[in-house]
Length: 88
Ligand SMILES: [Zn+2]
Image (cartoon, rainbow, N blue to C red; front, side, top):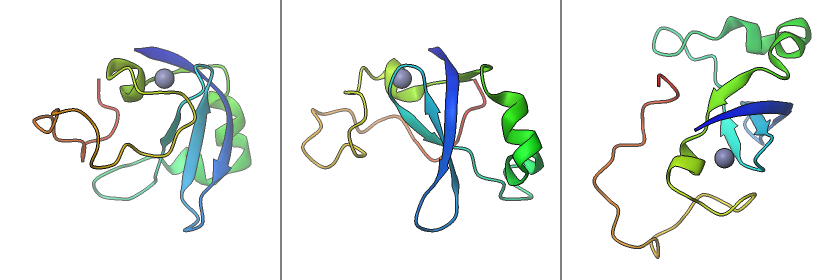
């Protein structure tokens, strides 16, 4: 599900988190060579993607908005690997 990026914040490890219009949050790490998002490290780069869309995996999974990452009590959906970020 494509959702607009409303704003950014940083988590306690300094990784950038996009806050989406749907209320979900998604990490947008710059972690080369696996994840190349050099723009996320600059204020200009982040400002440029505000209002653009990001594929929200949480919406695809119908996760509740603004909640922490679903823990072990999520109902029987253990088959999709979630280690790959946002290439869809
Ligand atoms: Zn969402």
